[in-house]
Length: 264
Image (tube, rainbow, N blue to C red; front, side, top):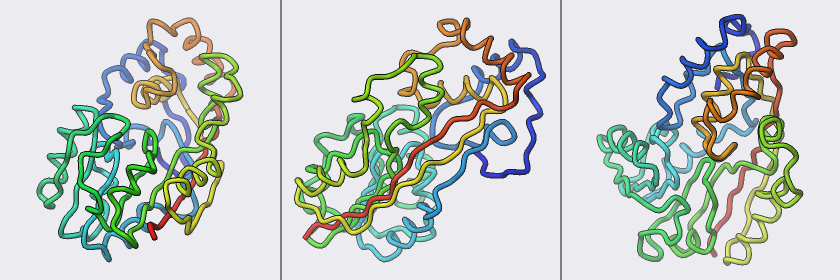
């Protein structure tokens, strides 16, 4: 999603059926969010994960990128280590990541969606990175890191975009809302034998400027409203379309945390 504050919604007044059909036709593979330009905005964390990741990759001899999606974020790095691998579990993303990253010498490995266990030998990598992994299995991350190696990642935090989730699913239990809590992940990492070097968290504003943006987001980020389809949620989508037309963008908030951990 774009970070521009100057864009104004240009689609909200279009017919509901037209906006939804356009969103349903849009491809969902990979982590390219350019489709949302002019239709949704999302604040970015202040630390600039892609830049920091690129700096660490440039100084490493070997690296593994977990849940690489279509490889878009890894491909932003100006320089990659001589040995670089990436994992991905969703077939359309595997194909896209392979096309994008193979010319740069990256081996894309098909792995289970939760990456447990990782299909690599112990102490294989100097650096492990991840942007928004489904789950960080710290015991596996610690296993594949070399002594002195680093895990550097940006994780989705607790209750991320839950204004939208709860619009469709209703109030969520406390244990669901508190999942992915950064200090709980710190304890998991430490229990796996890793030392936390840095941990930062931020809450960031998201605006959906038309119902098509909502539909495409829920089709792309499938774990937000599991089993989402337009037909199944038509009775909630139509009132939300009218609400956005009358009142302006639907506002939600994402949570993100930066985590850096080192294997002694």
